[in-house]
Image (cartoon, rainbow, N blue to C red; front, side):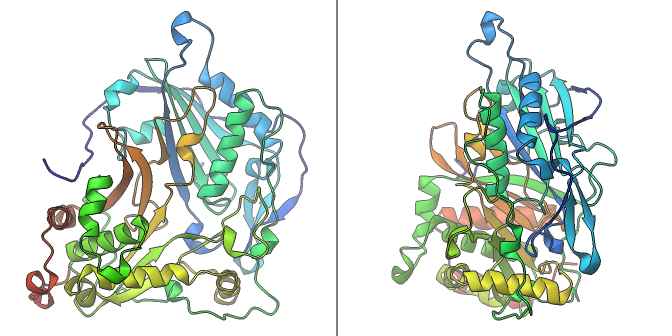
Length: 467
């Protein structure tokens, strides 16, 4: 059996949507302006991020009790927005491209829908890419802008079996994964009858603002301006989405390539090194060109004192590992692993302050995307734990890989249990079709124990760069 489980879906179904509406806070909320932090409003976060949770039917569903997820969740959102009222506002842009929330109380966008499909028809392994995603998270015309648009779009789709799908799109400048899960958890608590969320939201975005005067004190290669001289930003046509599962046997197969002094490396570090290497081989960049991997690192605990409990802004950095394509692909895996471990260890409180300073000094630039791979570990974020009264999600997490201001650059590590009951990590990958074939072949080769970089890639230097 192929050790890589790839998801592919031919399932087709019809979704009937009601007209989109705005859900305002259930009670009057302050009308004020709240500034985002200098980490929040960087160019690389000015996009919408999709999340999707699937839920089984209520155990009481067969008895005919009225458990309408749409009605319950709509009411819970309105109640939660009383506490998280900035989400009901709209973003404005001021001097120096500074973003702020105009707390207008207009509300978040909500779509009620029904689908003529059961949860079972999605198969026994729910993972991205999901069929008909654009129907389950409808892009309401005029709603997707960063400025002057709803900051959240939520669609609840009832399924024929009594289950439902909760899909959400977030303006990423407002929150990171931890902050979004905090909000979703609060909606779940209100849906289950709470009158106040167990964790109260804390704004305090000024804690991640630049210093006065700003001074860049760390090296930030993640924001280098790299010219795309050879057209190596991923082409957007003919993109293929696949998910890859890494359970205990896959991880242990890959661990065989770790040299003794790196044996204590985490699964995140191992997978990041493997995927970066396989992806680089698949895209065939010029051997001497620089390639990068950006690791998203949650910085909440790096502060002294730590950021307050309830903080729901963006509190992460993009530390980067940089090398040449030839060195990455010709060297044993340990080479990539050391680079990834070093990058992760760079993130400190000083590093975060230095990023905020860089943003103000350089006009809030986008992180480097040329020959870059970005990985985000949401295995501990808790999307699947969110409970609206129907228990935990069957699947909860990012709706697809490759999302971002520049599509195709990012992958998420998502907690997943396969049909054999194995707990592991599923990673959605987005690549051009030609590269995906090579990527699958390389990854399967490593999982089967074939990894001889010095023998296999000796001719790497004569591979022509991708057009």
